[in-house]
Length: 199
Image 1 (cartoon, rainbow, N blue to C red):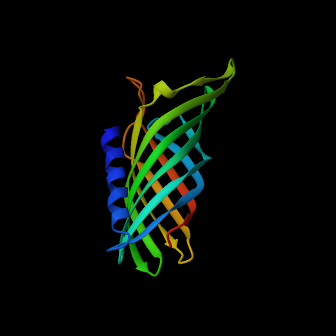
Image 2: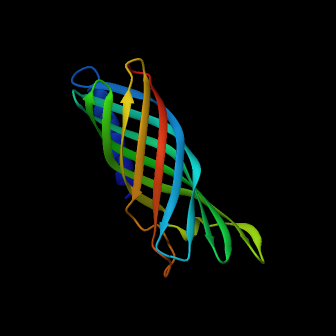
Image 3: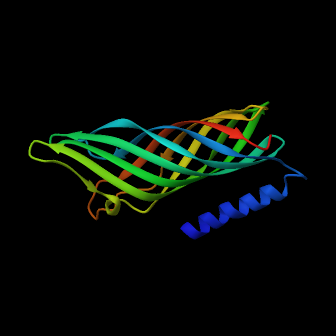
């Protein structure tokens, strides 16, 4: 699945680039921002706190009048805190994320956007503090190697190159790799600033 997703992104980039001088208004740039991340766990004994993470990467946009397609490649960090009677656990994850978004322009650069986001787990670390133990461990193998989320939001593309995006990613895949573990899905609210070099 990973190869097919990356292949589709590469093909999108080629098609959008070829349309630059013909049918589409092309954009290419860098973007970065902050994430407010959490995990949804179906267990009433746990309480979860959101934590701040970060993202950075590149985007390519092909705009056709009121509609645009915008694939991105982002390095994405997600963190959360789980509290229970046992103590406190801090989880940190690093993903390579590939959103592929459709943007619908309402007026000028104001847009709403939606599409899938594919995530590939690079690293996972857990810090724990209980009555008896304190330490940290690698938890990469405890979570599935890929994640899929539905991304919705809005933004504004300024004519001088600045872009602003606000999105909510709703994980639709159980990422817990434990055989008898609780269902776990990602939840991410993010704000991004970007710069389009092809304005």
